[in-house]
Image (cartoon, rainbow, N blue to C red; front, side):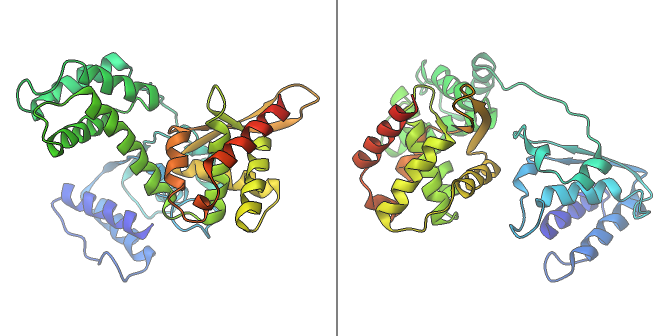
Length: 325
């Protein structure tokens, strides 16, 4: 979290035409807080901190609460603790609608936020945004069906304008790399696969083998259901099959569920508590932010997971889904 505090101090110093007098590294976090407070107190009567994509500030895993929770607590308590004489407000922006569920009780008590929800962009709005960015390409090199397709992909998956712009950029790069004189529908579809896979790769590269096995089992179930969701009970049985197949440690269902819940931190999976009647009991139903097939393909690049054939996994998944129906 120390780097984030330092960046806040730098932004405040830039606005005040001042300088930060502590180094980025090698000093205690408290010194960085003190420097931020000094800059604010000496230069501003009031300040608004706008913290974009705050949920990405997770911090060390050995802490009881994520770094963004501790940051919100410190900023919202600074006035009460007499660290700040200026009046401050904090705007926390996140695409994760469940971010506040991870905020600690102390931070919630002092921050007391007012929620403002913004709807995702729809396909028409995304088309309008993309057409304003079309001048990044040479004239008449983007096929007519490219922008509607990019907008449709983006609207279906995330409704995020930045990701839509990134998708058309990647499509253009692929067309250029392939020596094509136009950006076509095929380039958009290739770009969609590439962008999805890169995002999943970025997430799974650093997670443990156990989390990969949990994620792979759950995605395998979701890939075989009509609505691309997976029951935790079914996913756990597939996880058991995977661990037995590769000789990995096998944990209890509660641990499997907890590891899948942790994946929500990366905005890769979400879940809801469900029940299909009094006889079935309660279970979690997992939904994926990316196509389950993309997650499976990416995880198969792990040599241990690749030891089990997709055909075997699919057979087990189908059998488990039948037993649940």
